[in-house]
Image 1 (cartoon, rainbow, N blue to C red):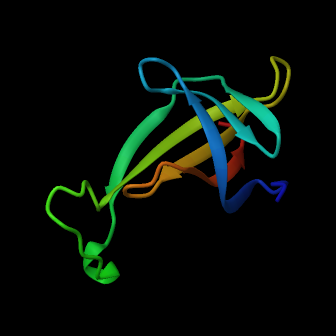
Image 2 (tube, rainbow, N blue to C red):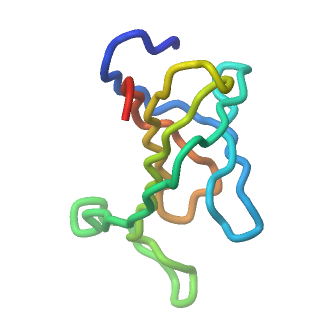
Amino acid sequence: MTAVANDTALDVAVDVRFTQAGTPLAVRHEGRIWAVAADPVHWFTRDAWWDTRRTASVGSGDLVSIEYWRIQVRLGSSSALRTFTLRRNPLATQWLLEDISDGG
C-alpha cells in the first residue's frame, strides 16, 4: 500500500532499526529505507484489557502496554520530511506503521 494522501491510516508491518540507546534510526517500508531525521517522540498507552477478555498466566508479561514512536523520516538529504507513527501491541515483536503524514 502506497501512502499518497496528507494523512493515511495503514497498520502495515515494518522493520525498524534502533540505535544502541533504543531509539529508532531507520524504517524499512515498501522496500525503501527511511532514515530518522529528527528527535523521535516516544509514549505508551494502555489496551482496553476489559474489552479483550484475554487471560494470562502469572508472569506472562505486560498485556496492556501499547508502545508508540512518532518519527520524522526522509529517503535522502534532499527529500521532503514525512511523519511516521509506529506502534507495537502488547507482547508483540513486530512494529506496525500506523499512519503517515506529510511534513512535521
